[in-house]
Length: 230
Image (cartoon, rainbow, N blue to C red):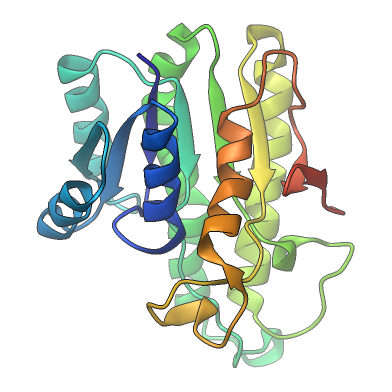
């Protein structure tokens, strides 16, 4: 049995990642802040999908979730750090509300970091450990422009975390990569409301990082299995 944790998974790309992994035969832990929404989302999906109450911005919630998984499941082969907020397209660095920037960092960077620290002992036990940080080309220093400061900076920091962690875990066989799902249409409002490619394609970009073969790339930034400029 291969087990994957997906955060922020009761809707959007996270939910579709859960669906695709379950269809591939994985046991999927569907992480959601709201217990009822997580349970409802899990019940709608086929396969072995189990709701897990988890607020990535709450230390106690993350620790409790990790303890529950260790006690009830005993394994976690892959972490998909999907939870993210604050596509602040109408904000600017020169006039930013730093409180909102801090909130973005708390979820997009520190939330992923917190979850990784809590579940890493289980991932290290796996013979095929994988960590996928769902990032965005908006966090690429090579292509970044103005505006959207909270999202830009938090995703760039997530990319830096990815490189650092990948190098540290390289000798243990744990593959760590950042993956951009691209601009997707979820039909649920938010970032993809104005258009974009099908959500199935964006989720498949993320799932690729989970299903990498041993010896596959680590410490990279990818979309659809192809490198994205840092």
